[in-house]
Image 1 (cartoon, rainbow, N blue to C red):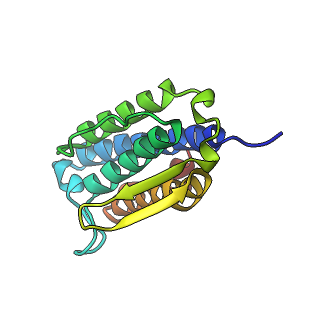
Image 2 (image 1 turned 45 degrees about the vertical axis):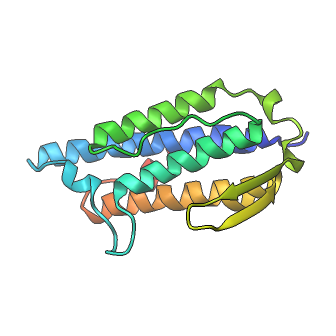
Length: 167
């Protein structure tokens, strides 16, 4: 039995995003228990030149929904990057998961060799075959930004651990 691109992406992405949603819930509770505005966490960073928590979640969402759509040969939904609260970030995660759940395994057939071209506002361009795109772009970016979001919250005192990250 071979592992399809669908199976390699959709279930792990849903699991990781679900874990992020639960971690954000814990962050909301942490802020409520300690009587501070949870919006402070949304703008938190690990270091001054790194993206804040909100952008980490937005990128994790975008890389998965955009990547899945490209591999499935369909248009990706567009979300505004305007989340200002943990609740809004959780809603974005929920919308991303809902989109992923609409995709079918048959949409990914032949995607291993599909040419994927990315163009960025800074002029950078990348080209991948579908399998390389999944293995060398989508999944590493999903896990990097998810891990960084986890680390931002942990650094700010939110009581979470490996079990929370792994879901």
